Image 1 (cartoon, rainbow, N blue to C red):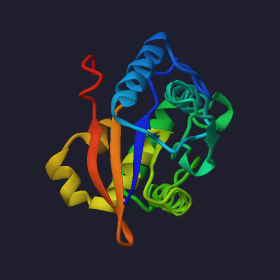
Image 2: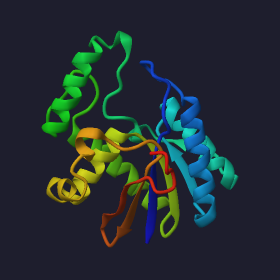
Image 3: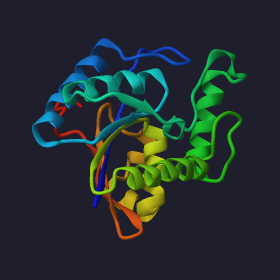
Image 4: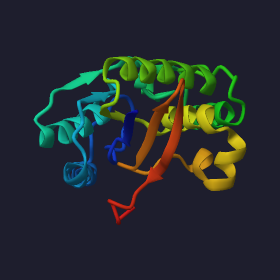
Length: 198
């Protein structure tokens, strides 16, 4: 079976647009890379094209001697920029509405349903290319939660992790997906046991 480990990017610099990792984020990515090196032999490391994810992926790929490839389908559901036409408060309001109503089309970015659809399409492509292998994906909290919601359903997710939809994925948390038969199954969601400071 094919395994995908979705690693949330590390803590980012607190600025709009496409910020990179903060000093803490670099430490989180390094710690996660060392942890994965102990147990994993990935065939590939794939990343969202956004800088914080690519920088995280660089640390992950580096310990395995792999190159990072990017896939735009793993980009964040919504990404706030100063020139995007929304104040930060308006962006947060749009984010919350899109989280509460999965089909709501925000002023910028994608609906939760659309973000999950594109990420699942990307996951299916990874499964076809690296069947029965492990692939590491560096991504973002919104698109990861959207994808997991589509796999397990909101009822299950709210019961197991009641704050995840509202609070999001922790920095460098690992979400493990397995492809079995014709679909994906979530094995671990938002696992931060390797990053005790979370």
